[in-house]
Image 1 (cartoon, rainbow, N blue to C red):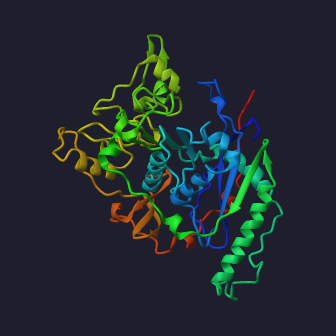
Image 2 (tube, rainbow, N blue to C red; image 1 turned 45 degrees about the horizontal axis):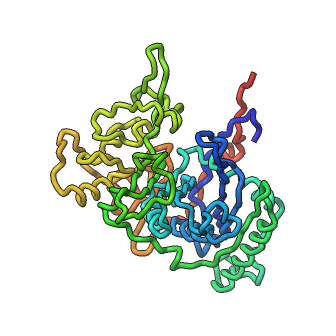
Length: 441
């Protein structure tokens, strides 16, 4: 990436065919320098790389497959320094920067279920899952690993018929067992190519994973809503699961996290500006949505924004994508205790389970409705549940929503399955230069 160019790449997740292709899930471990607290440069782009390759015809990339891969990372020698402590246990604080796709974003219920499962299983002090805002997935650190991985594919041909063709004259599968063997052979060849790579002094580990319906469909049950309300905090781009103060519930802390987060959870982001009369925090509608005070600065100054109409400061009060409609923030906030959630459904479940009585602030109460998305893309079935892929707001990420949570009054659902849906782009979009040049003097 040239320093005089500003990245303007669009998000690369498309609703595309999942037939004859391989799906590589790339995981980049990022080494964090010690004794450099407060410096962004302490989080490096260097570290080990793991690639899990799956058949696009017989598997998929879901929250459950990512959970399987996370458990695999914990067993790899090249990830040992990053993931294990001196006693061989998983380090007590886990931070995951994920892609903003519908199966990875921290608002997706299955992502939350697996995060809580990891938290309990490994006795973590905290797990944080965060993502970039729409249009900025190219800034995810793992994208730095994608360039050298992609370069090795230049001129590489992976035959689909290594053991003989499994397709008839019309391109339809006529031998399913042979098809799986051909996919596996192609995946193993691709893994062999990437296994010979070293990126920035760190080995790449790649492997083809056979389809496993049991592991790829397993979704842990959520704990009680009382436990959830005590340990979990949601927001548009960040999920936090943190140990509580009840040692009978969570046990002793294994890290010094509370010295950094005495309130247990990350404090909301907000700007701090300077004027002739001193420091001040502008109102959300007066903020440009670009400049925010750093975490340590917000902690050290001790000034917080006013949050009229809310019992507590909502984490997303200054989130640019939620500024157009303040009602969204109200609908996501419990009027009893002030807890903020990332969906209206979670608020309803929380109120019904934890309060079980009329809202004390009837003047601020809002009527809850199903989500009415701006666009509906496709549907899929996972086990006994049916999900709809929606664009909730224009210029925002797509989200998988339970079919019962979608209002179809002004929308129609395509009859095609996800694997049959292709992106429609113009020639100009396809050939557009993804870089824009800054005027540097």
